[in-house]
Image (cartoon, rainbow over all chains, first blue to last red; front, side, top):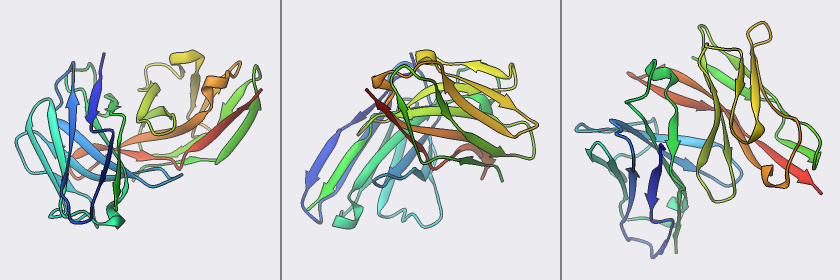
Length: 121
Length: 115
């Protein structure tokens, strides 16, 4: 259980292209999803918190006009990297928290997708 | 604010020997702590979580961790390492900030298993 599917797994595109990444919770509902960025040999950096039916909350320093997040349903959040440039090349990972789990929200683990390797030429 | 510190960036063990990955936390209240594993070019897989029900937590793939409040530690152990355990391991604490619970990640420990 608690499977999160992320697509595509890898994208290679030209500078200036916009790229959309999908994150789906397959067997649970997630009112909250998270988008992370991971640089080589580093830990994950939270970019934004995606809330179903409302605007995403972005972390300090993350450009919301560059990284558009949509969370239109309880099982799907999307991240669109607009007008991507080489410096946007990275490994992007989404996660979803199972709101139906027992106990406190703080105890509910996040379940992660397999990530998207984005390479901008 | 809460935080976690992973004391070793790299750990090497021989196959069949015990694994110890160290994590210390800083928290003003009873924390929710997690250990995740990440294989190359993959997302993170939950190994186990501590939620104050029991101090010794058993996870998947033979891993376990013990919550020690007096030492503010949550070290991950496994009795016998397998080649497939080679990966990056993250200690995580759940922190309430900006109206929701977010993860605070440690810097990670890369586990190498020698044949």
